[in-house]
Amino acid sequence: MKQKRTILSYVIYLISYSIGCCSFAQNTPYYIFSPTLQTAYSEVFKLKINSARQLIAQEKSQTAFSIYVENYADIVTLLISDEKRMYEQLSDNQDKRLDVLEDMPANSPYYRFLQAEVRLHWAFVKLKFGKEIAASWDIIKAYRLLDENAKKYPDFLPTYKSLGLLHVLIGSTPQNYQWVAKLLGLRGNIQQGLREIRMVIQKDKIFGNEAQLLELLIYAHILSFEDRENAQLLQYLQAHEDNLLLNFFGVTISMKDGRGEQALALLSQQPRGSHYLSLPIMDYLRGENLLQKGDYGTARTYLNKFLMYYRGQNFVKDTYLMLFLSHWLAGDETAGKPYLYKIDKVGIAYVESDKAAQKIAESFRKGRVSVQQKILMKARLAFDGGYYDAALALLKPYQEQQFALPYDKAEFQYRLGRIVQRQNQPIEAKKHFERAISLSQAEGFYFGATSALQLGYIYQSLGKNQEAIAYFRQTLDFPKHEYKNSVDNKARAALTQMGVE
Image 1: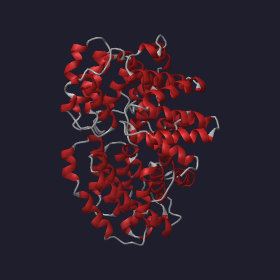
Image 2: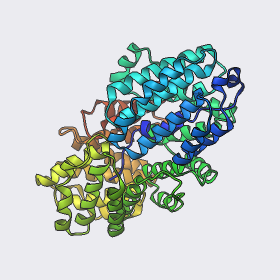
Image 3: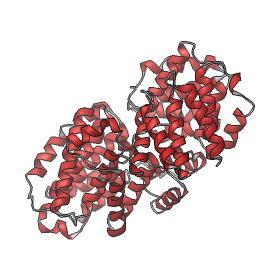
Image 4: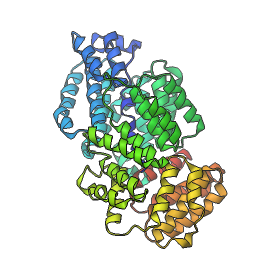
């Protein structure tokens, strides 16, 4: 299944890539970033955690930067492992480190900046483990620290990297939640945030590369990722071939944008060795990619390998669904059923892919899935992998009236619309999306919301802004569905870009 991931999970390391040797840090020994700690930070950034911890241990005195890099190592380990028990063991470190940082001299722009970074680190970890309220308060406090820092030290560029990110995230919040942000004093919009991030790209050689990657992730997960951004991504990855974390992001961005062959190529280039932190999620991604390509047997090999080594709680339900599909789509439903009936018993339904997996499994168990869903599922997977000709060939022999269920009819129209849209046939795509909306409205199928979103993009590209705005607003008006958060965020982001509050 196409994996839906929040941008918050994907940019945790970006938010923390923010320590440099600029003159601001030299006014007190507490804020000197030593060469050893710089190397340690670089090692964490590459997922060479053990090496980083050894370097941190070499520092004779505790500084703001030693606390920061140590915290960064913990955060990256927690996000990669996804282990609840480890989170419970390490979570007390947040308050301990903040207490030390708050007692350090306040006459440096790093004073507030580092406290904000630590809070953001833990906020994203808390979100990953379902602690939304605690995470929200950390984000609010981090925002206020960064906003104050920008006023007090307007020329301190690292502030705008993190503050710019928050401005983008706040700006993409759906309209019905905007009043909460304003009530709490949180301000921002996407254009403002992008300007701040681009300022860092253009003016700061220390943080320019990181800010550029942050911009790419925003385009991939909130805005629209086009060939220009993809070329920048590949150039960036080529310049950092030994960085496992960047390779991971390259794979996920490629898969999200339907570039399956590119993702497989990056997976084959994955840096390897015992000095890297174990990253079983890469086997999950490869298994998902191979399922999209129709290589069911090899997909199962990687999905089972993922389950063997992964100790986390997210993506487990989705993995079991993909294992079921690998048998069902190959015509062996009997072999797949044990995986189907395990979905309710494993992992948690927190990320969108796991929520969708649980809903699909329930439909299968209750006999709500028609035989015709098999062709629709094959087309969906092929499309998600970027195999558009194969996806179209699967659907072309069919007409809407050949599908008995309203859900299948709506999906058929939506899938056709997406395929021809990617094949640069926007006029043809419009007809399918309009029909999908009509078929979805009564029952609240998510195909209606996603079709409205794509129609918004089409009209926006044609310069018909009023029509685009109407469809983006229609996207937001659809009732709750399994992809509402991500779809609404994209619609809200598009409206913000168009100057619509």
